[in-house]
Length: 183
Image (cartoon, rainbow, N blue to C red; front, side):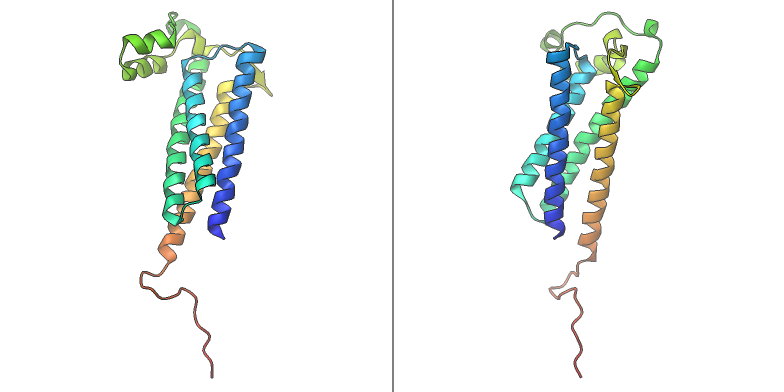
């Protein structure tokens, strides 16, 4: 039963991730908001988390497979948390401290190694610090941070639960249920 519960949780996380991706594409293509580099990195983390959860829901592996899938999902959500947290910090900084030059990401990846490009994105540009859309007083980066923190908490809880279940199993081949003693 716990594995079925884990499988349905993966499917629910997949649905949540697909909704987040759908909203991000809606804001980009319908509303007309242009995503910055950090927004695209966050979108990549959501896509990775969503893909891992879909694979886990469809695959339905054994106990250790679920631990591996939750670990991969946790890594994706932790990466998204760090990226969203950095963007929230950039949005709280004065704009005059950030670099004004923001080139196309395709040109950056073609001209420099990927680690340099990621480092340059984390330094921040004016595009990353602009708050162009809010809902209930929270920017897109803050909503993204809330989503990733929630997924991180869920992933940590599920990993701890699955590891606890693993540690409770007896190492020998005997059953963990006590037999009834008959008189």
